[in-house]
Length: 144
Image 1 (cartoon, helix red, strand yellow):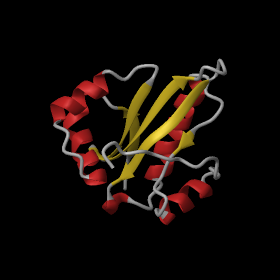
Image 2: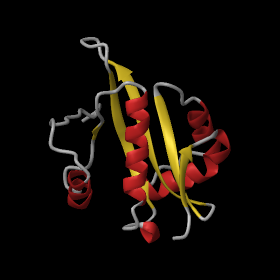
Image 3: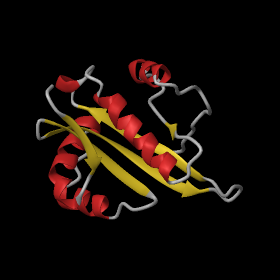
Image 4: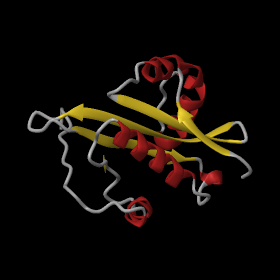
């Protein structure tokens, strides 16, 4: 890896973001739909892309919400992904650091993230960069 850069995703990055999202979770969002979502970022959400030598190789998404019970915003990393061929080079750490910087700049007192219950490698990574167990997340799928 010779040059890593991280920047906010723009609508013109839609095809790359859609490609990476497909690798991440099999999502088949079109670049057009992904581009519209990227363009609607703003103070309440942002996508960051990692580029190595001009190629998009990873992304993270951050969202913000104001809680009813406090004036402080809630910041959450909703996705973090790096292409397999580019892993273990500090890219995920750099993406997460940039997301944390953005959250701090917007007044969030910290960042919360969710990861798969069985994703031991991701959990180990998050712990290694300072995250700790915080809550149990539960869900209900309609129709079950």
